[in-house]
Length: 281
Image (cartoon, rainbow, N blue to C red; front, side, top):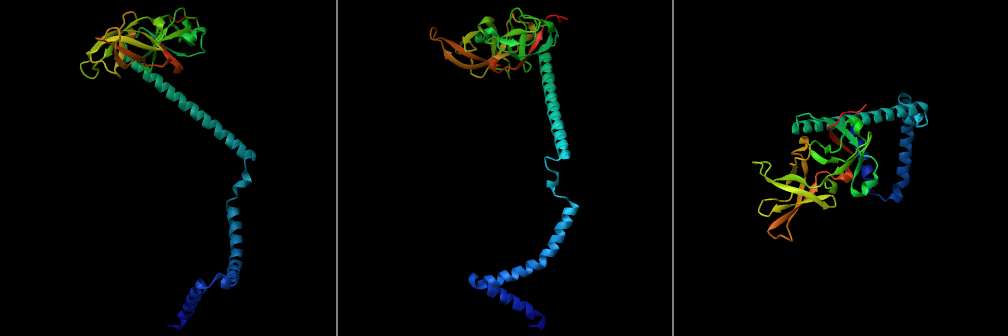
């Protein structure tokens, strides 16, 4: 072994011996050695810490009570709220454009005006399922106009005697709408075979109708309007879907279908009215 390698070998042997000795024997020696090493390293550590703080001041120097920080936080919150409001407005405009396109595709005649009507507070007759709308004859809304949601889903019809600024909505399934002629779409993707039916209020906001048991009516099928007593622009729009089909008790050879409206009137916040009247100044 070369003379230059002897100190390294001695240090390795010493480290191995100290590593296997009990702590109660070598603890004091190791503590003394670590103290010497810390004394050698602390001075440059303090200097480096001072340089670091000089180059990059600690963050606590500008806390939440600092006027500059308060102003920055205020501006951040302001611009963030404006961004969210603008994004919500863009989404709402896109929704209305999609709905307008769907309505015009279903009825390109254009013999109507689209009026967005928000749902207001419950009217005195709300116990009967009637809905109050914050739009009236001033925007061209007339009794019997059709209210739609998402393009071709019928929510109901405007009730009688609308005011200048308010009106009422009779949702699908309300007894005041009377019987509604409709078609159950048996095969919408294929030849489009449909079964004519007459809907009537069945309680709980639902509709029911008589069907032929061998007619192929099944739950999930779409029900569309085909009633001459309704405006032309509403023909073919969706009224609801078949929920269940059962056998009639009085006529065992006939069936009874339960229809769920496409729009739940209890969750309505806004509807689009296909207004047919003249705008009143």
